Length: 275
Image (cartoon, rainbow, N blue to C red; front, side, top):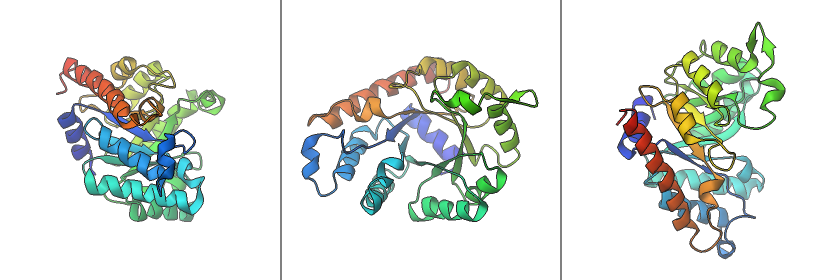
C-alpha cells in the first residue's frame, strides 16, 4: 500500500485509527475458549466490528509468538482474513525487529512475503545495515522506533549526543535511508510537545502514535502537534478497544469505542480543513 492509498483511505473513512490486536488468551471472553482457535475467533469478531472505523490493524507479534506454531498460525489467519475481506486496510506487524543484515533480510521476507503485512516496526539501534533490508520491497513500510511511549524511553532515547537527544539523531540519520513513501516513525502519544518538534523535523512523514487510551495519551494534543497537510498520523488504540468488554457483547463494545475515537478524529480533521 502506498502513501496516497493510505491517505485516501483516511479521508474516505474520516479516521486515522489503528486498532492494536494485542490479543491475550487470558483476557478474551471465556465463551471463545471452546473455539478451535480462540485467538483468531476473537480477532475476527473485533475486525468485523471495527473495520468501518479503522484504517489499520496492528497485531503485536509477541502475543502470538508466545504460543509457538499455534500462535503463528493464528497470526497468519488474522492477516489473511484482513487481506481477503478488508483489502484497503493497512496491516502493521508490530515485531520490533532489527539485526545484522542477512538476519534482517529474512525477517523482512517473513513479514512482507510470507505474512503479507504492509509494514513492520523496526528498532534502529544497529544502524543502516539492520534497517536497509526492510526497505527493498515495493509499497511496504518500515516504521522506525523514534520516541516511544513507555516509561523507560528516558533511559536512552533522551541521552545527548552531539548536542541532540538520541531520538533526534535517529530521525536525522534515518532521513538519509528512505523518504516518506517508505518510512514512518513511532512517536508515543505521551510525548505531545516532543511530537511537535519531531513534526517540524519530519514534515512529510507518517507517524504511528501509540499510547492513546490506556497509556494516558491525549488525542487532541497528538493532533495539535502531529498533523500535517496530508494528515500524516496513525493513532493506535489497543486495550481500550479490544478489551472494552469481556462478555459476549465484546465485539459490539469494541465497535462503540472505535466509533467514539473515529468521531473525534472526524471532528479534528474537519476543524483542520483536512476533509
